[in-house]
Image (cartoon, rainbow, N blue to C red; front, top):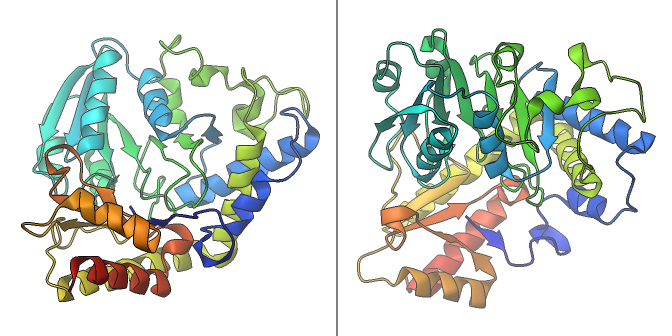
Length: 366
């Protein structure tokens, strides 16, 4: 991923100034009526970016990895069959978390850099309780067709990782029959890491584990923050969510979401697509080879093969030192042979594309 070193500094390097300013505002108590208003508005805006009407849509008080754990611990009963589409690091993590919840995991392995084979996943088991997949695989820069998984899931719940896709590419949880999903704030939402935008529909909530292995992530304890049919139990100031909400982070997310929706979600998606297309075309013009399969490449996260004979770590270090740009190494077996370049949030713009290409040309001598 790319981010200019001074991510939250002044000027164009700031991904979403509204989110940054919100972090600096005076702190509110987690039961302050003003904070409850902000939380309500944040949840409503999250419904929009998720593409859902789910009442139980909210920012969990932890990063995206905890969102993943919340999804599994609340819906996996011991012995449940969980089919996981694995085409990268985060699919692998899903198998680990599901197994720790006592699931019988059926991992459908794919070549990294390729999208999920929907037919293979849907035919992996005749009656799984859950089918899980990563929409935008952060480790490989690949988009998979979760809408097709939703259309063919049968009685299974569809659980989706949308960490890198939310507010970056089209995401329609209700239309695609996604039953529950989790995301992160630090990618295309342009907000500091620390919250997990989460959604679960009634179908999945009714099948939840009565007493999950995690007390902190027990969705059954949401109480007044997300009551039945959106009713806040007890009214403002009487919410029963079982821990203190990170008020500054929620306020920051509120600011970031406000900016996105003011721009327009379709416009934001189009801006990410245009930036990704321009970056990928420029990299190929430099003679670099893209890693993700053509036709399934994410616009917000581009994976490119490290040229033969080039020291990946040295190039990344020089980019950061000389140009203030950070790009990510690859993951797993591709740690030293792939770069991951992210243009997300406000960094998905033409001048950022030109900056990245010029800096790479300088460091690589091309």
